[in-house]
Length: 217
Image 1 (tube, rainbow, N blue to C red):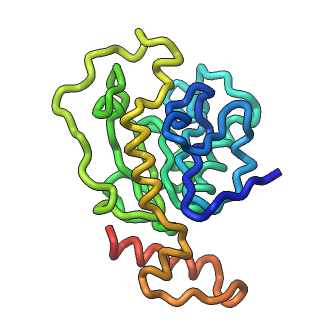
Image 2 (cartoon, rainbow, N blue to C red; image 1 turned 120 degrees about the vertical axis):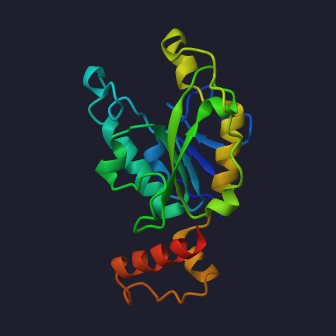
Image 3 (cartoon, helix red, strand yellow; image 1 turned 180 degrees about the vertical axis):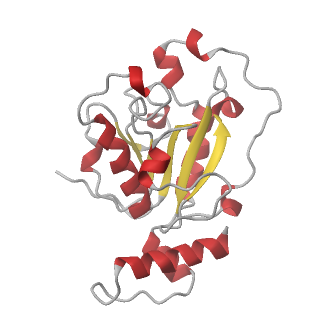
């Protein structure tokens, strides 16, 4: 059964059972709770499984339905606002039409940052794409960029340590998600009239949202 949340409440989707988001008091969807039941309305932090989309996908053995979870996560971020993270080079980006870093917003007002989780304490360098909808680059703020990369080696870490989200990175993504508003709220904030359902096509609404994002980035 789909679960509704209070406006503005952030939900973390597809997280580990021992996720640090639970320590932050965030509503979490882990292996024991189907993230596909999420029905808004608050923004999300999405960590969908990546092995079917990553550079080593040809050797991965994902479950039959696993690849679709990332596409569901993209839909959630576009619908409710928030942020999705995936490894650098993830093929989810071209498959879902997500914009590359330093490119303009997509039709949903979404844009992409390339970061390294080592900046937030990951033991090894971990370049990461984050796709953001519902907030601007200015609201995201400065990044803790470090010239020297993390000293660890990815393949020397345990699978769990490779996968875990560093607590400081989780706090950063929470900040991003909390600064996000839903697409309809964005249009109101921009002073754009929102026509009742049925009066304006989805394509027209996306075009308005894209124009708002282009002015705000």
